Amino acid sequence: MSDESVPADRADGPDRAEGTPATGEVFAVEGVEKTRERRPVAAPPEYTALRVAEPPALDGRLAAPCWQRAPRSPRFVDLVSGASTALATEAAILWDDGNLYVGCWVEQPEVTATLTERDSEIWRDDDVELFIAGPDAAGDGADVDVAVGRGAYYELEVNAFNTIYEVLFAWGRSRTPFGADAPPELHADHPQAVAFDGVGYAHPGGLRTGFWGWDLPGLRTAVHVDGTLNDPSTVDRGWTVEIAVPWSSLEVLARADAVAGASSSAASASAASASAASASAASASAASASGAAASDPRFAVPPNPGDTWRIEVSRFNVAKHGADDSGGWSWSPHGVWDSHLPELFPRVRFSADEV
Image (cartoon, rainbow, N blue to C red; front, side, top):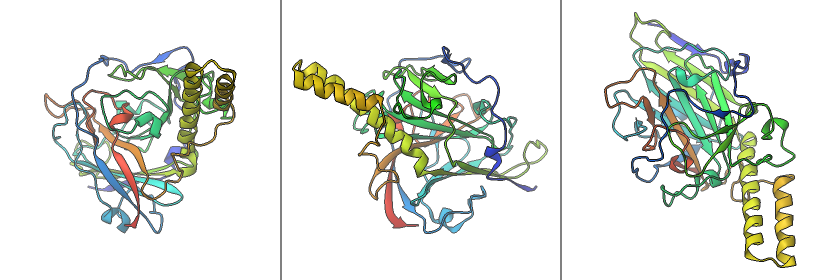
């Protein structure tokens, strides 16, 4: 049995896959039946992310002392039922002033991957998925049954080849959810900006716009296979994924929240009073929302010690492990076969304590 590592720069190499969604379509995952009901779930789990004094090597092995000392999540559970799973999956989160770091340990006796083009449909392979939500997209989490439907969230998928798929989602159908000064690929009239209505769940928050033409600047990923990739003659231990996300690139989530908040304030002011003063205030707020967007002041980037973000890590398997296995395993159960429920993402509190 051999060990295989995939370089951290693999994600920068492959060309974008053909067949990415085109404007006017509603993006859907083939063969998934959508529902408006989901099983009741408990409040999302909580986690404390510790600081690192020095950045990890980002080789995918998760062998650095900081990863060995980092608190790990509980073993992932079935995405739908919350039941225990046949194989172990755990995650850990670290941070410094430059980056958010995510590590994931995946037990898998036969590690496989087929897709090598960036932004291929990585969910058709065994994969690890990362979701990061702005506060408006996730809400305060006091009631997990309250639809949110504002702001934005980011999705990243990685397979054992270290091929990535990524997309940024903004709730609603605004033409400029990140402000008019955002790059063209973050405008809803861009050819790769597509309406999205979830995967297995028709979210009460309504439609989102997925921005498939946007790449998160500075993203780094690395994968290590503890075994032999795509060799059914051997028994593998599994694979590990290491991700570094620059805080500067996550300011886009705060911008979306600022736009959503300004739009909401404008609508409220307009509805509350028809007076000239109120109308003027509403107009000013609306102009701010559609023009250059400032960051949401509730959403410091990088976070301040004590701040809480909403971050989900999950795993999807090509082969199911038992009749009751949904094929999707996650840190937080969602009660339905759909990862796109930011209000159920774990609450991650950033601590000033070093690992």
